[in-house]
Amino acid sequence: MEYVNCNNCGQDNAVLLNEGPDLLLNRPGSFRLVRCRNCDLIYQNPRLTLEELPLHYPDQYEPYQRGLVEQLSWSQKQDRNNDMERRYKHVSEFAPSTGHVLDIGCATGQFLATMADHGWQATGVELSAFAADYARKTFNLTVHQGTLESAEFADASFDVITQWDVLEHVIDPKETLAIISRLLKPGGLYVASLPNPTAFEASLFGSSWVGWDRPRHLHLFTPRVLEHYLERAGLKPIALKSFSGHLAVTLLSLEFAVKARGWSESRWRPWIRLAYNWPLRLLSLPAFRLAGALNRLSVMTMFARKAE
Image (cartoon, rainbow, N blue to C red):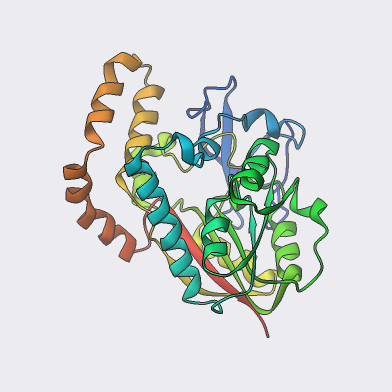
């Protein structure tokens, strides 16, 4: 672990926001998230070093596993395919009909495969060797295994660059966004989907909210702070949307809340599984739509454009 100053403003003037264990993978340790008093960036401090990070992304890490199409039920495949098509449609609102797309943190490649199906040249970057290899073999995708910095792409070579649930994981988001801006063509589109710490559920579940995901989420951005990051990188925010809220996210926060209280898994697991059903999913839709209209869902998606 290492102590760091605020990545946004450079100051060392933060207050403790919350502290707790790894509720997703149950890795040992307690991890702290702080809020900068000067600029409101939320960040992990002390944080994992670059050498420690891979230990918290094993092959069984859930975002890798849910992309393994051969392990999904029919209904899970439909949900996953619908989610990828929804992402494609939102990107298409602001992007040309075809072009070259780079997905940073592409995991097992399902979004890129969807873009390729719609005629896009699709390239990915993925830190996990397991996930990158799966994307290549299953979808015949071009995926660089490693960091964005090590990929050495040519400047101004992409029409669209996306990061789905990735920016919060990077060591230096300021540098990452500078590289993204350099790689985009003039007028190119950047899309970032990430946790929204101003979400209603962040207040409801407190330190057990799924969006904190200690220790993997190194930085969390309010919409205002994210806009500042983008503008500094030469990317103009053009839209903020909340279209990823669903019952599964809420129930995962609920699972974390009861786990943090030390309840026996045999006591709560059956009830949470029972709660994830179609009637409750339908009943919850109005609440999620209202929160989405207010941009207060647990996940927000920012669209930004590089100047022509």
